[in-house]
Length: 381
Figure 1 (tube, helix red, strand yellow):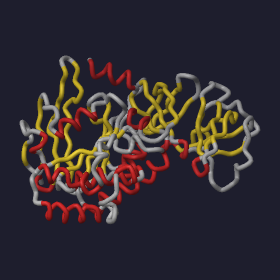
Figure 2 (cartoon, one colour):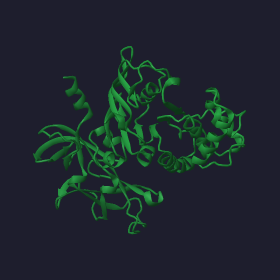
Figure 3 (cartoon, helix red, strand yellow):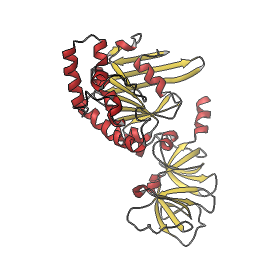
Figure 4 (spheres, helix red, strand yellow):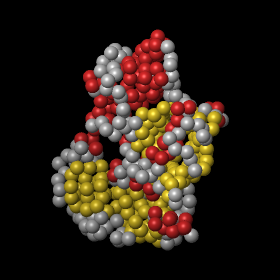
């Protein structure tokens, strides 16, 4: 199987004194795939990328590219290249000179450089840009030039360190689609580092969610969104409403959870492990999983009704964002705020703050996980 993989990490560790930045990370990235490492600032993803590039050596474990160990191999000898957030294009060179710079350093004959530059410009949809100055290009075009400069060296793996972070929102949205399409067309394996879940979900074949130096879950964007395996993934990937409570009864994979703030919610386990009586858990429900209807009451706390989780509350804020419009509803009994997605049928286009709403969602849309604090205590024990 190894010859079908462009990149493997085997129990990779990086420590700085007593601090472990990357803690026993393993992954396999198939040839020609778009793989993202997603996590908050300080989770270890940039340290991992720098180890892949060869800028720092691992404390333990191995990095294998195209079946060969990279331990002790310097950056300029590895079959990888890197695109940074700040693209570092040379302003005194035109586009073709920027792209061909690495080939000139390798002393490739100029006619061969010209041919390969023209070819890679075609591949990134900038066939006529070779003679332009860098400052004549848009932000998206400069992004493609930076990628072309890396691709021309024919790396087995292209490493991208938050390359869209410096772009404005509209251009960033556009470039997400462009990058996905570009990777598909050129077929080079992309390893993409980001803290932006939308970037990771939109572009990637598979995503590793990283937290405190470890991978919490690795899977397809759909799997991470619909089947998060830990409380961290459930809270970090996509938007969710969150409650905490204690399990008061269990029936198969379903549990009744007495909420810390009052009321009861029925939920299913978000992991493959069973839930135990008395476990302290965190509950997550997506805003789009909640059905809404107008109500005459606002005083019913969370309870089970007709086999569904139900509560009533008062609309506190309306967050208009076109197809992504939402309402924030305050549970009057407990003070808990719940965010719900508004349906696009127009039925609630006249909804105003102060109205009463009845919220309901099916049991299988509520996921429960052993609380982070309890999990850490259990791990320490």
